[in-house]
Length: 251
Length: 251
Image (cartoon, rainbow over all chains, first blue to last red):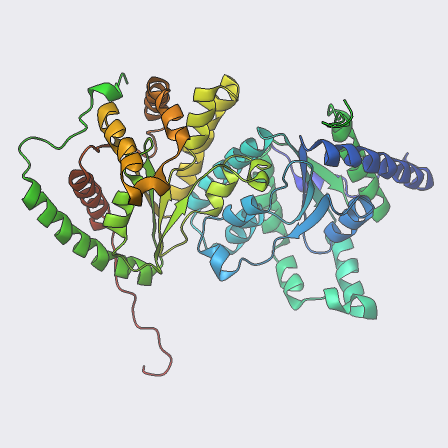
C-alpha cells in the first residue's frame, strides 16, 4: 500500500449539499439511538469506536455530536492521555484492554493504543524493533476483541495543515477556547510530516483485521455525517434483536 | 508432540534424597528472596508464575511454600475462580490481563486463562472453533507479556489419580480440611481422562513462546523443590542489578 495522507481529501465531496447532509446526519443519529437500545438490551455485542487524529482534528466534537445523544448508560468515552506511573509499569495494551466495552456497551476511544506507536516513533524514545512488535501486538489484540463480538470502527480524522493552524489560533483568540490551548500543540505541529509518515505506516500495518476510515475533517458537519454513516452501516449489519421475555411467573 | 500425561512421573526420581532435597529447597528459597529484593528495586522486570492442576494437586501449598517467604509487597497471588458477570461480559483474557504483574512485581496465578480452555472443552459449552482461537489468543497474549520483560513460568502439577483420591478423602476425614471440600471436586474427578486430553492439547498448542513444566506432584516436598529450582534458575538468568543512587543533593 502506498497511501499518502497528503493525497487524501480533507473536505467534503463537491456534490454533497451541506444542508441536506446535516439533515441526513440527524436522521442517522436517530436510527443509531434506536439500534443502541437493542444492543444495550441484548448484551450480545459491543462496539468500540476509535478516534485518532492530530490536535484540533475534532475528536471531541465528533464524538459528542454523533454519540452524545445516545443512552449514556451504554455509551462512554475513554480518553487516553499520558500514561500514569502504574500504567507505564505494564505493557502498553494493559490500560487499553481494561477500557474495552463489555457486551451491550459502546465505548468511544479518544486517542488509543495507536498513540503508543505514534509518540515513541516520532520522538524516538523506543527502538524500532520494539515498535515493530507493537504493530503485531495491536493486530492480535484487535482480533481478540473481534472474536468476542466487538464491532470496531477506526476513524482517522484527516485535517489539513492549514485548517489545523486556524483552529489552534482560535484557541488563542477565543476566551471560551483558551482552556483547550496548550503550547505543546504547536510543538507537535512542527513534527507534522513525521506524524503523517507514522500514520501511513500504521495504515499499512494495522488495517487487518480492522480497516481504517480516513475522514475528511476540515468541516465539522461532514465529519459528523461520515462518522454517523459508517456507524449506522455497521450497526445495520448486526442481527440485533430484542431479547425474549424471561419469566417464571407468566408462563 | 505425542505427549501422554499418563506416561509422566508423578513422584520424585528414585535417586533424590528427600532430606537433602528439602535442605536444598530452603537454600534456594533464600536465594530467591535475595533476588526478589533486586527485582523489586530495579523495576525493570516482572515475573508471572502460573500454577495449573486438578483439584488437590497442591497449587495453594506450593505457592505458599516457595513464594510465601518473599516480600509480599512485591509478590501476590491471584486466584481465578468462576468469572463474575462483569468479567463474563468481556473477552476471556480481560480479567487475566488486568492481573498481570507490573515491573518489579512477582505475580502468582492460581489457575489462569487455561481454565478458559479446560472447562468449556470438557463440558462442551463453547464450540470447537472458538476454543481453537483461544489457543492462539493465549500465545499472542503471552508473547505480549514476554516482550514487556515479564518472565513467565508455567507449572502443571501432575498428581496421580490415586493420590488425588487420597487427598480429596482427607478433606472429608480431617476437620481442618473440611473447608476445602466441595462435592463438585468429585464430579470433576469423573472427567479425569477428558481433562488430561485437553491438558495434552494445551501442551501441544501453547508451549511456544512459553514452555510448560510438568511437575511430579504426588509428594509436596518434591513439588516445592522442583518449583524453587526452576524459579531460581530463571531469576539467575536475569541481569538483575541494584539501581544507582539517584540524587541531586549529594553529587
